[in-house]
Image (tube, rainbow, N blue to C red; front, side, top):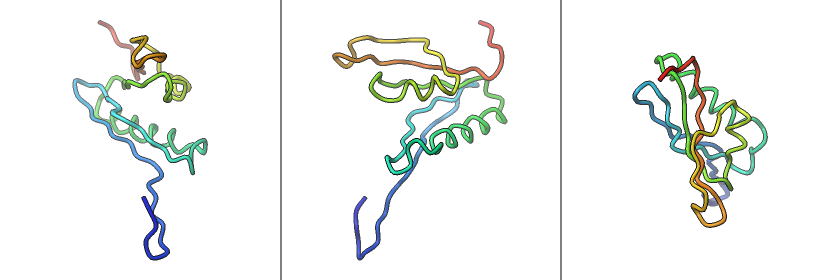
Length: 105
């Protein structure tokens, strides 16, 4: 990011994900402060979830640190299924998932 000849370049959003074994893994989701809170992250998630549903995926999961955005994922219906407290110190590494259909073990 920077300024060049009076032109400003800015990446405002990005999602990296992959699907395997009928699950979507959200590697990372980033939204610029410039558009945070305007529904941009939810729009990206809606698109990614719609694509993998069409592919027959049964759910999605993500890992996140407690100081990042676990509440964002919870607001979208994701539920915590794992936690490693103290990683990093004073925080937790949190795993969340959302199923699109009933999943039986």
